[in-house]
Structures are given as C-alpha cells and as structure tokens.
Length: 305
Image (tube, rainbow, N blue to C red):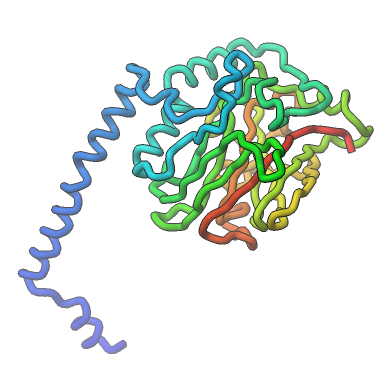
C-alpha cells in the first residue's frame, strides 16, 4: 500500500478517539462487577463451603443411592457459574484437604480386583467421583456431563456427552475424577489380570466417530503432568481401545513435557476423558468436529498384553 493510503486508514479525528475511548471504558466497566463478584466467591466460597459438592455425582460405596443417572452440571447454566462449580468441586475445601492428606499420607495403593478400574454396572467399588472440566474455566462455551445410565439395549454405561465449540477461545471438554485416595496400583492389578506382556489400559467404549483422549495422573498436583493417549471411535459401534503404557505422552496443558519422569503405574491418582480440538504441541485433532458428542464407557481395565 502507498504511504497515503496507510495514513488515511489510520487517521482519526479527536472526536473519534474520544468515542472509541468511551466505548472501551463502558465495556470494561460493565465487566468489572461480575469479575469482582467472581473473585470474592473464589476467595470466600472455599472457606464457607459454597458449591463444593453441588452438581456432582458421587460413585461411592458409602452412598450407592448417589450412583443414579444425575447430570454433573446443567448445560443451561451460565458458563461463569459452571466454571465456578468446577473450580470448587475439584479445588474447594473438601477436595483440597483430601489431596493434602493423600499427599502427606503416601498410603499404600489399592489394586483393583481382576484389573478392572471402572465398571459401569457396578461403579461404586472404588469410590470414583467424576466431575466435568470444560473450557469454561478459560472463557470457552463448551458444556458436558457424565452420568450413569442404561442404553437402549439395557446395558449400563457411563455416558460422557455434551456440546463442544471453539467459541470464546475454547475447544475442549472433559470429565475427570477427584484425586483417588488411596491411589490405584495399576501394575499390581495388571499382574493379577490376563497376559504377560507390557501394561496396557483397556477401554470398552462406544463413541460417535470423534478422537478422544484418556488421561492418567500419578501425583496430587492439580496441574501436574497428565499422561495422555488418544483413541479413535466408530460412530455408534462398541470398540475395545488398547492403550499401551509406553504410548502415553506426558503433557501439561496439551504440550509435551519432555523433562517428565516415567509414569508411576503403582500410584495412579486420577483418571480423565477429554475431547479436544488439539492433539499435542498445538497439533490439531484430525477428527475434531464442533457440535454434539457422546462417549459411552462400559469399563476401564488394565492387563499385560
């Protein structure tokens, strides 16, 4: 472009500058009360215990009645409220205290019987507590839920479903367990199961054609290393996804952590499913599609194969 055109495109009168400044100030001021309230709730909420258990489905043997098909978070709630619920469910006073106690205790891990970590037909065995973790925590607009239900054939499933969108700068949705205490000894569980090869995670799932991620963690650090492996699904068909331990990628916020130590299979502290626009290191998920999605989970197990 010529200098004249460049100058003309950037030239503004004093009145235009003032008008733009007023609009900017108005927008900023309109957001201030909301974020001030959010900050107050994040500070005061954990102390008062607000929201810390709201919207959650507890899969615990101590309370089998709570294993009903109850949605974790209502998708019609405003994104900021859902973000707040997620934060307090995973990082409220109860959850934080449990992580602290688990980290200090360093107790002996539990080996799931027969290598079965999750069974939708009997979900209360290991006391797994699942909560949704969507991109609303960073301003996105995706929404998901996880519920125990039965499909049209009467088969018990854990159903992870919702709507994923890149609106608001997001593009991911997920469901994660609270910190497992005691942790799971997957190595011992696999040794008691079938096979004699390398430790392998086995997922019995039915998807919609999307590529999902399965994630494991081995410490109590909320934002610690997430050991991740992707798996593909066929629309409407049951699939057995076998994920070798050697294939899990150590990541932090979807970026490879090249300094991470090997995964401690004898101390698994959290499980997670996710659907994301990204694979690793800014690479795109080649099968990602915005819109509604569904993943039915029948079981999660470990074997040596």
